[in-house]
Image 1 (cartoon, rainbow, N blue to C red):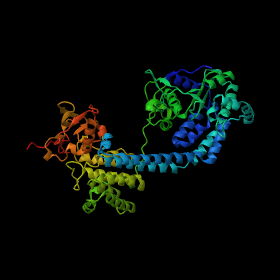
Image 2: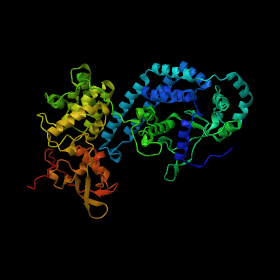
Image 3: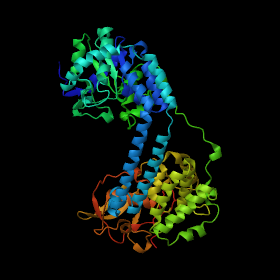
Image 4: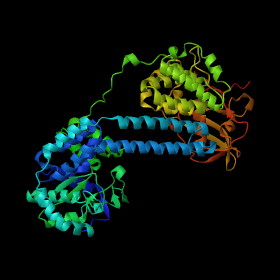
Amino acid sequence: MKLDPYIRKISDYETRLIDAIGAQSCLVYLDTSALMWALRINAPARQQFIDWCRSFEERLRIPVWAAHELQRHLIEDTVKRTIKERSSACERQFHDFVSLVAERSDDNIARAVGAGSSDTLIAKAQMIQSQVRKMSDAMRAGNLTAAYEKVIEFVNEFVMESDLLDISRELSAVGEFRYSHRVPPGFQDGAKSENRYGDLVMWEEILRDSVGRGAGQADNACIFISQDEKTDWISASPFVDAGNGPERQNRDHAKDVPLAHPLLQHEYEKRGGSGTVFVVTPRRLSIIAAKVASSKPELSWSVDEWGKVSYLDGPAAGLHIADAEGGGRRALLSGGERQAPVSSPIDRTLAFPSVSEVLTGSTTSRVESARGLNLTELVLLLDAWLSEVLSGTLRPHQFGRLLASITGENAIAAIGTALAKTREQISNQDNAKVHFGLGVALYFQQDGALRARPSTELGEIFFDLCREPDFSEGLAILATALREAGLAETFIPGNSKTVSFEIEATGSNPKTLMELRIDGAVVTQTVCEDAETRILDCLNDEANTASADQLIAISGRIFLIDPDRMTNSYGKRKFGIRPEMGFVELDFKSPEGFQLPSED
């Protein structure tokens, strides 16, 4: 037996695995966990994975024991039960986290994470919680019948004809010895009361099938596709070399080299096989499949959806779309050709209202009824308005306009709670209309003219709404209306343009803030009487200091610019703030986007 290298080169591993995939003498096996994974993923990804497996034709095998275990899981509806348990557990954990935020949050903690106040932070957490709850409900409601039928059909095509009785006789004599001496595979299942030898049965099926058919003619023995990453199957890589020297393995970014346990390789060779035994997960295999497809345009593989469900970061930071030599990248769809994204047609029966429709009618009496209420009273009032939305007596965009019109110390907390409830109680399309009405009211007066300065208390919450996919159509309509009204491009919501943010300060550390500039224009002044908002009013900091990150967050909220768009070369550096320093008036219609106060 040979020990595996401590530091492993990713390129060497992937090259050997790619060669094995292309060799006609190499057999490919799937275990139960890989089949369960195929049941769980979405339909396009499942189809791509199955199509890729089918491309091996007679080289693909499914052990009888894997099919036997899958049958039991289908009868017991294990996949459905697991989805319910996982989604419910995530929902409970996030509820606990939101409770922790509510208990611990104060203005200092809120500003540390880029929120303007404790109320804003709690409101944002509640909004996310409602989204998690809706997603959890959707996960539990999914129907798996079509998935079951698809996978059953696939298994029946490729299931082996192993003699399990003969295998069971042999394992009854040696199984206990193997597990008690930690001989792979499956020794970590030794404590199970049921199916403790399942992995060992599948391994014996693979040995008898692959060695018996001479699969090791070339330097590639067999590939075992499994979700199992326990050390009784694989030898994990403590350190890998991705081309820039040794670094710790990272499975989430495909920076790992999962070799078969050395004793598995040793046993394979002693039983008459040659070459390498690969044990690889479907997610890691998606990277390899993509590289093979990229280097061979004649293949008709599509692996993009398979890659998406395998890695959260897009996937594996683009590794799945690099060719086998690491050269130019291309979209890996059918035949290796780039295809235009498919857009879903917009249902015009659910079209968004216009800006003028949002602004039609007076909201004075409703807004007055909300004035001076405590938090509990205000939440109850907004609940009543939401009930009107549900009954159809209040349009969603009108509800959004009303939310944007509420002011006072309890406004942010109550509005955040109301927006969280809308996500749970109305459709995604109507939710987007609420967001649209809120956005229109932030920027426009009732007569349709742009506000001299937008309503700013809801700035951070509005940024979050702009990032929601369901709001994309409404956001585009709002952005077009703002451009037509003369709003400078710097302030267009949803704009991806980077905005420069500069600080001028003087004196010793911490330096005293003199000016803030956004896109080259000064946005601060020192005449307290003429300033609508003082910087210190946004800080409530006894030391009268703020970091560059805090100043960006405040400026973004005041001028409705997403802070993520503003560049910052000042890091965490602290600046002293003079009590009289405030923010200038803003003229949206000036060509530069800003107009300083007149000197007189």
